[in-house]
Image 1: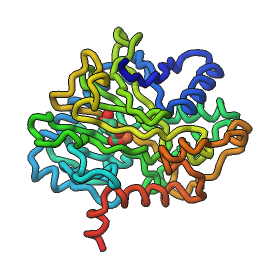
Image 2 (image 1 turned 90 degrees about the vertical axis):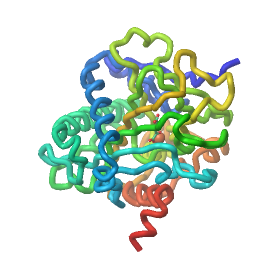
Image 3 (image 1 turned 135 degrees about the vertical axis):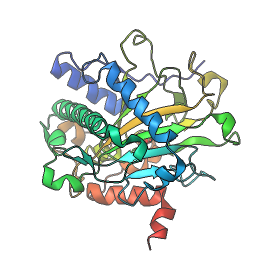
Image 4 (image 1 turned 60 degrees about the vertical axis):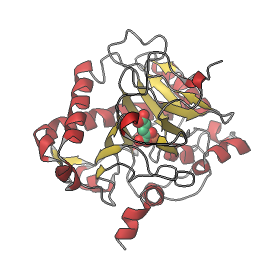
Amino acid sequence: MAATSHIPIIDLSGDQADVARQLVNAAEEHGFIYIRNLGKDFTPLDIDEAFYMSQKIFDAPLEEKKRCSIQTNNRGWTGMHSETLDPKTQQIGDYKEAFNFGPFIRGRAQQPIPDSVSQYELRFNDFADSCHALCRKILYLLGLGLGVGDFFSSAHIIPEELMESFHSILRFLRYPPPSSTPHSSDDVRAGAHSDYGSVTLLFRLKGQAGLEILKKDNTWAPVPVCPAGTENDPSPPILINIGDLLSYWTNGLFRSTVHRVVFTPNQGDNRVSGEPCDGPRYSIAFFCHPEGSTKLEPVPSDRVKNFKATGDAVEANPYSERKTMTAGEHLDMRLRATYGNLYDEKK
Ligand SMILES: O=C(O)CCC(=O)C(=O)O
Ligand SMILES: [Fe+2]
């Protein structure tokens, strides 16, 4: 039997209290949620354009990309094998390239960007703004469902003068074709990890499989790009995942689920029909973060109070354990683990 992720598919336009309830249940049970993309928050053109710009970034001459190399502020370009998402088990860094955009202020990126895409700066800004707006909508509904009002969403309002201390990132990813990157069967395109922020949006392209989540029973299940029922939607659903911060805020009730990207599904059964893994793979992620000094204390919700973590949940994701730190301290800890060399070089 093929493993399946059983991630719920939710249409945000339904009755808001009902949608909020569905989102909270999905966050608790799976930590991953498909949001149907019916062209309201993002038109098919917005998404096509974003993937077009992504290709332009990665096709830029190497020298241009190197000029924008990632800094300890988490902005810029990372080449093949320079990020290790699962430092405990990976022998070699991830088989991918990525480009991270930090905040835009009045339409301008606050970092170098490749000349080949400088003409699209405003479009990148618009796409990041739409991502941020959708994240805030989801955060609002999660707060509603937990009975804590707009706590989560208002922690993500960004006054312009504080823009630099918000750490949201719009990230473009390219995984080269497996045939162009010699690898062993144990290698992964992106190592197993949970996400560092509050909530992540993930945009993928039809026919490009590879993402897997770690289920509660400790087995990996593929996450199809177009799950049954969404095949005729204008665009594939946007995949939402709960990040570490929501897990802290809910004392582990919301699962910051571990996931990875594989070259080929690790078992024949994990193949997703119609979604091969043999070409290049592009994806776009938006990692939503609050202001750096935000404290990661559990929110005053009865559902959170009554939740008792099982040993398994904490083992699967150690970052779901409660600790009082700030969002900025947590991000710094995670970035140091994934980009060890970058931080060492700065010493
Ligand atoms: O490329 C993907 O599908 C997932 C990427 C991811 O999990 C990440 O960058 O955090
Ligand atoms: Fe991730």
